[in-house]
Amino acid sequence: MTAITHALNAALLHSVWQGLAVMILFWLALWTLRRRSAATRYAVSCAALVILVALPVVTTCLLYEPPLVTAVRSETFRLAVAATPVAVKARFDWLLLVQSWAVPVWSCGVLLFSVRMAWGCARVAALRRSGELASGQLRGTVAALADRMGLTRPVRVLLSNVMDSPSVTGWIRPVLFLPVCAIAGLTPEQLEAVIAHELAHVRRHDYLVNLLQMVAEAVLFYHPAVWWISARIRQERELCCDDLAVEASGGALSYARALTALEKMRTVRPVLVLGATDGPLFYRVRRLVTGGAADGPSKSWGVVALMLGFACFALSVHWARGQQPAQSVREPVVIEATVDSSGQVIDARVLSGPAQLRKPALISVLDRRFSPGNGTRTVQIPFEPPAPEVQADEQALADQLAREVERQNRAVQVLNDSAAVALKRATSDNLRRHLGELRAQQAAAQNAFMAATKQQREIERVQGELASLMAQLSAGIDGPLRAVEIHDLSDDAKRDLLSRMPVHEGDALTTQSIEAMEQAIKQFDERLVFSFDRTADGLVLRIYRSKDLR
Image (tube, rainbow, N blue to C red; front, side):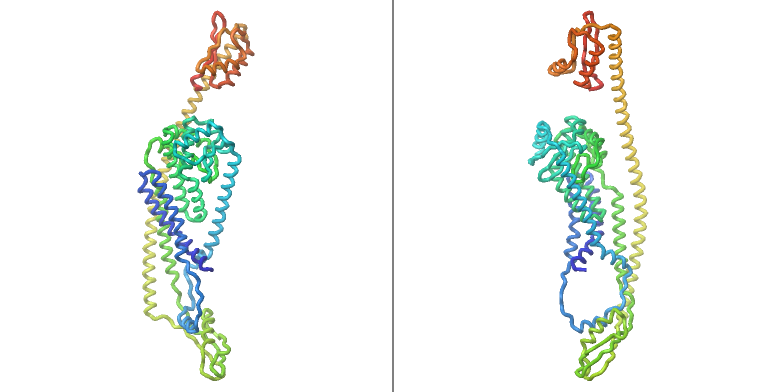
């Protein structure tokens, strides 16, 4: 294993407890800033993510040690033979296995998440190619709104049949996608507020920040703190853009209704596209309508972070204890050496001894010089055990570590009990919140049903009057059309409607002509209805707009 690989392995393992520490501090910061502005919480969230990414880099630089090439003398081998333990067995061999596989597994994960980013870029490029350039009037509206918000960069406006809500993509050359269904389903004020939200993303350079978030998620994909902090950044980002959109459009209630309408049309969108419907919708609408403070961070996340922190601390204590060497074997190394007349060793072989000591002992004997005289010499190199005082110190340290581990285990047990109680409370709060959402949706559905019922009754009444009139005409009670009166329309619209009518003043009315007239009126405006009044001179046609269809 190279020096850089060893440093990177250690940095990845250290990043686990470092990320937990950042996660705990970030949770406390969110709790402290829960009544501050969304922009402040957004800045703190981005800073936490930057620190989380920078810690492994700094740790790698601190742990990296360049390899050194030095010459080793024979005395060094003799000292190693006299002081090296025969058998060193760690109690947590699996931690060494994890450290050896950390970099390969991490590299595979980074590769997979990089492919995910490339796939998202491809989808965004496909959306750009499929979009159609918006009309001049719509582009002018977007340009005027951008100028009002202080946005200097030009924004390209495209109409899309694939997207279901307005979205923005691109940093250097931003593009605003406006779906056709959103333009048709929103009022001009609501559409302007939603467009202001997207222009706020462009003004704040949120696309670049979102791209850097995805890079951080790809590099530190294994750590839950990265995903939690990144999700919090996206939530606070939408709140910041909501504030700018309300400030630019001036209508919080209209913008809240627009968000609700967009949520009904929402489907899946690429992760590299920023949209107005991102984030928890119910909380955003409640915040816009009531103007309340932000909710604090979930208590369950803080409990989880504390539990994981204590677990990592306890595990590090166990690991440190497991690194203590086992009892050494005191068997000496026996070597047979062949010496020439000058006392120089010309050949040597190991007869017996521990396998860990044979090679350094053989090298030490080959470098020795014996008394002059040819022949074979047998050399024994014993192992010198540590002094009794050192063994006593190690035993005292082991006992102290055992007591510390027992204390930590008791603390973890108490924390587990507290976490269970907190989890039960959080579950109860979530159920009550969900019940409130269901009741609100039920009330909205009842109101919509009542409005649809009233509209259906009006349509049935108008159809009944028309059927009665047509029955009278079929029975022969007809006459010439004396006059046509049009209400609720401008003069230009009246002239346009009269030009499309199949009957005019003085014409005799029949069943076929009335059906053709009804079709022409509905093609002109679905909200228009008509009726006939009989006078002495003939029939008077009155065209007006239904109150329930306005």
